[in-house]
Length: 153
Image (cartoon, rainbow, N blue to C red; front, side, top):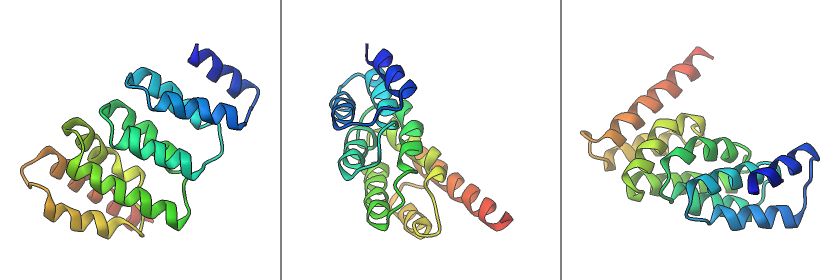
């Protein structure tokens, strides 16, 4: 039903507090499939601090690694400095304290979020991660990939 509602909202370009609230309610659900559709629904609405907080709490600090890529695409819409800081700190927490699969997924996909303003934070964070871990290797690769793209122009 939520997927059908999402399709209706998307087709009709609906933006409302009710749609947003429904998306937030389902983003807090324990089922990853429901969270996935809720993220899609949330992406049809305008970015807000409440939406950002919900994504960081329920997805970045959540349990479903499959949702990280989609969450990062949504996080790209948050460009204000205050939002960027909140995202940076939450991703750092996710890398260090998140569930194992989510931490690896964050490290693997973080190049979608990396920029000149946060790269040094994540480079420094590597000192706090076990160099033999998958999180470390994935983060190292993502940082190298970002730097190669940045150097290429």
